[in-house]
Image 1 (tube, chains in turn purple, brown):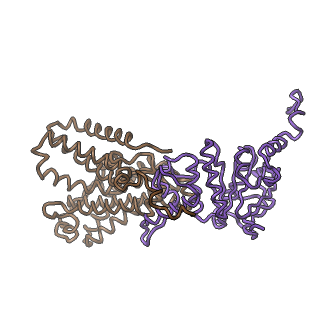
Image 2 (cartoon, helix red, strand yellow; image 1 turned 180 degrees about the vertical axis):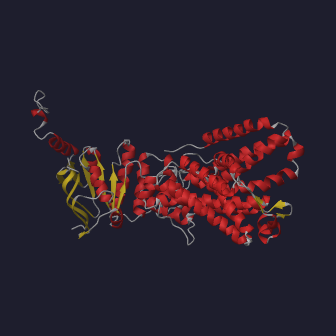
Image 3 (tube, chains in turn orange, brown; image 1 turned 135 degrees about the vertical axis):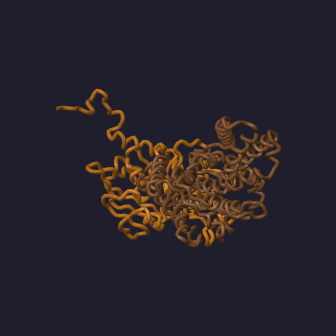
Length: 265
Length: 335
């Protein structure tokens, strides 16, 4: 059995009396891509923030490699090898690829002066590792000149340099064209091939179905479905399930004349 | 894996040529240099007698160092996404401590250290107020400038300190005499510029200043202490302002309660004329230094070109606006 990298047990998060997450069980094993699907408000971003240690869960346990971790926070999350690539705000776009990859973890000599050549060759190695090469840019290119998919590549290369075992990608293909999405998929596959894991979050079910080995559907703060690719061999099947989750009685039984909301004094 | 073996041919492309990369990486500074060269050419044509003779350059070399000590750290502050308008008062305050110590008979070397420590501490104070209280640095540092200057005025009642004895000190020989007709301050200022350029471009600190100015959220996520970096740039500004103050006192043998006042706008203009944009994340130390050179020469240039002082402000402004337009065209802004 594959090594269990991280596991959430009955994790809840409430803001006052509102439950953002109501008892979520989720795990990611070594070397797998888990697709997390859910509509807006399903609790995806709360879950990401909990994993990143930015938000503390109200209750529930977090296990790293089978060991329960107490006082979960950002530093613990980093120590556990979790790196989150937040949607669009992940990179410093006016800086070079090198500066982004080594941000906060510069390769420097004793006096703090950068070892520029070492950083350059290390960046090339990381980029090659995830199949992120091009004739158009070098590690010295400005990130702002890169396409959306390539920017995800920089963020993923950085995560690998930071020794991440689990890379959480928050909507990495949202607003990307088909070719750009393909690029991101290529990076993701390379990361999986290297034995690392990815939690791929999205609401485009086709994208998630394409890339993930396993799916977790989140709905209104609860896990509505856990399925392997073997059980959900087509995206259509997954979509059909999602529709069932959204309209439990089936779309056909929807009666527009029936009162959906009634307000009485 | 064949990819690991072929590093040479596959990775090469036009941008990899070292010369091209130098041009691209330094286009803001090179643009500023071009502005400077064109401006000087015009001045030389307008008045060859003045602009081909040494005295003009000698006088600029006396005042330019003071400006350089202010402009270069200001590039750091602007790059980190802040602004500091309190440096004139910090300069005056540090110079005041230096002057008081010298007046009290303390060795000028120790007095210099006293002045510099004062500058760094004031910078840390200003930075901490801005960063921890989350204030707009534009307004907060303006307030600090008035407060510090006011404090100087209240305590000294506007009286200056003359330090004629300074001329005979070793410190003066080292920091403020002249070497083969060249004012020696310029060498110290150039050393400061070169050191700062390395700090800015090739040091962990500079890398983090860029990261924080570009995207503080990302920098924080990567474990950079954003507030500490911001405060550190204000401390570096304090350090530069203290040097500027000490040098200015040594040049004049006098500390005035207004020391530093006239530098606010020229130093700011130099940073932006030099090619550092106002939005943070990028900038150029070399460009800032050349910007200081441009601003220093405008004044003497316009006067000796035969125009009256009435034209001074107009041309001052014209060159600033033209330089900014040039940089806007020269560098794209990435978001």
